[in-house]
Image (tube, rainbow, N blue to C red; front, side, top):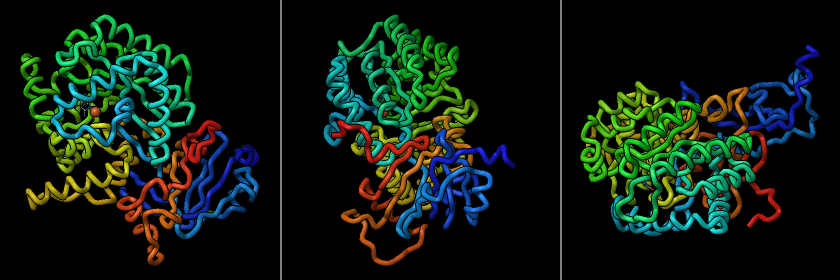
Length: 452
Ligand code: GUN
Ligand code: FE
């Protein structure tokens, strides 16, 4: 078919590919080939494909074919469904107090500094580069209340080639750091400006996300307008929910007309199939059912939940309720900016739940892998574009070498791909990630001339 033979292929990899599907948490395709077209999409992918035969349909030269070594595999890029970009400036510190005190003592004072665009540029460049290097091909960011520096975060993600949802944070209530808040009108108006200006840039991989910080920092009037803005523009929504028991108690006091924390957001049309809510540690089954019904998803942030002693999400119960679920680092409540860390903490937390209740079914590493990749893309409603190696999706991928020289994994023997994946998930780090691709573009190693 001469029509189809005109499909130009940018490059081809041959070797082991590991990804998740709806049916299988870990699907391994050994000695497979994957071709990426000139738009960065997966043109073909599979086992037992003959390159000569493929070249009748797809146009590529043999010089564009790269063979992986025995110690390498490709996996989908990881999705961080919840991360605070400004808080990266103090990641690894300030983990000595519970949530509300932590916000007052650390998060709010630091975030208020991001009115300074130079400071914002410095920190946002570092967080985008660090997360990309760690294999985060998609990040769902909270910025700060400042519109211009939030736009800058979008620009930096675009420049480095990361797929990102970026939210200008909205808060018209703050009793503890009084200068770090907006008036209701400003918050609404600046949200509209943020969305319009970000969309106007036409960045291919960066989208705005409507971001009420959480119920405690927003009035009903603000939540109502944010729900309307999201609906009228068909936008993503992100916030926090049911992270800590004191927070849950205060929300009930502040919104006495609502049946539950979930009901507060639901009432203001903030629970949609493009909503991702962080934490949800203390949600009832009834609330999970409302998530399921509305199509809203949860971001599981185990490092943060442990670090701030917030609570433990019963992942098994969330999955049982068929609520979409991804992993989040929640930097800096979580101290690590690596989704690999979230993979490990998620398993640890589920093992602690088993210690408490032997009936509890531990989360397997295969399931944690799926949450970090396909699950995250589903939680962000981006699974039509990313999350696994289905033909037609964008090529968002990590080239992993488990035996990278100088890396954290010692090569004992050849283990086969499944054990290589398990070792990488539990022991690996950025030294094992040779290359990172987003929408077909190689984004790691960095190509920026000013790479720090
Ligand atoms: N709830 C409201 N704001 C925040 C925040 O910045 N971090 C965390 N972990 N929880 C929050
Ligand atoms: Fe958070």
